[in-house]
Amino acid sequence: MNQTEATRIEKFSGGQNAKNFDVYPHSHPVDLDWIEEIPKNWSTLKLRWACDFITDGSHHSPSEDENGDNVYITVSDIKDGEIDFENAKRISDEDFKELEKGDCRPQTGDVLISKDGTIGKVAVVDNNDFVVLSSIGILRPSDDVNSHFLKYFSESKYSLEQMRSHLKGSAITRITLEIINDLDFILPPKEEQDEIVEFLDTETKTIDELIKKKEKLIKLIEEKRKALIKNAVIKGLNPEVDLKDSGVDWLGEVPEHWDVPRIRFVARMESGHTPSKSESEYWDGDIPWVSLADSGWMREHDYISETDKTISEEGLANSSARILPPETMVFTRDATVGLCAITTREMAVSQHIIGWICEDNLNPEYLLNVTKAMDQELDRLTMGATISTVGMEDIKKLKMPLPPLEEQEEIVEYLNDELEKFEDSIEKIQEGIERLKEYRTALITEAVTGQIDVRGEV
Image 1 (cartoon, rainbow, N blue to C red):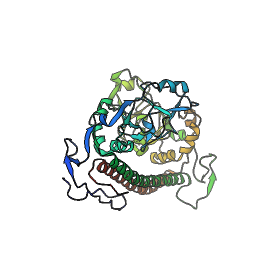
Image 2: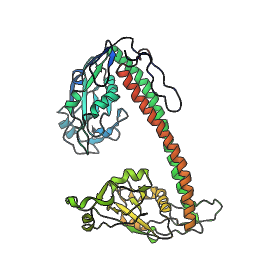
Image 3: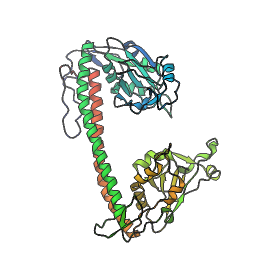
Image 4: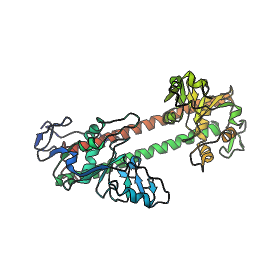
């Protein structure tokens, strides 16, 4: 046995020491690339021999029917080891009956595993009132395999590494059923599987609850951060100042000496265009092009220097897109509305992006914070739309609180200092969450591969 003392697993977040576990007294070597030894009474085999049935879901995407009584499940519906039926798409009885003629209706006790996109998301089926699409594999364990043990094994580091080593595709990664069938699997006796599952159910529940508490704390901090921004850009920094009615519902009262103009009167409004995608010479040039593909970056950052897509001089010349100067405040008016950032160099934008080029009496960073503060107003303007979008006429009517420039700069400096403290707090909590997730994966991996002995631990 390589391990001559109890396995040590990384510390819990927050300073709580993880428990040391015993190791199995007897082991034997195995011919696997990713592990050297397993307990003596355990065996190795290909996953196909641990299952009675391995298939995937339907390759036909049914039409949605909001009034349907049945649902179909995709990868996005597998969350935290469970199936999210609440947000799953509904289909008609006719479509459901057609789909279930195949093998895409799982049975209770089957294990679902994602094979497209986010690889290795798993869940155990506890009811079979749904069908799955081809992005999900269905594993039906044999009688001597505990469904939940198979689920935990599929979540282990070694199982995920096996799958990721065979990923195919670039834009959308995927693994095939052939790869799933050929995965290496470690099989303990059924009684030990049951004990391992009972132990992991208890331990992972504790870890998951800690993670949820930390995630809730992050949300509370983010709410306080939003409130701080909104109060600063609407009320200013002087609590003693006289206020007046702004005449704008979402603003309420503002300092008496502030103006409340339409944004387009203090910043030039620009939008853009998408060059023809059928013309390859219009793309992958030297001109950064802000689009909805940059939404993820804009959600997390206040400045944008690089873009997901670029266009060429030919693309610019053959479209209505224009070059916008540095320090243009850009924000999304479609899809996730109101994500915003300040450009650090010349860029063009798509038609889904609004650019505000500030006049001399408007600080771009102040406008950025005002845009963040008007999230509820933007939500109101998009309410009822099938696809979230704010119309150009509504954007032209948007008003903002406008202090003197010197006061804008004081507010920006104050917010920069205060928001940095919030970011530091969130970063520390996120680090704690990552440590907990790493601990969870390590604990599952050690338990299902027999590197720690958890019999009798519950």
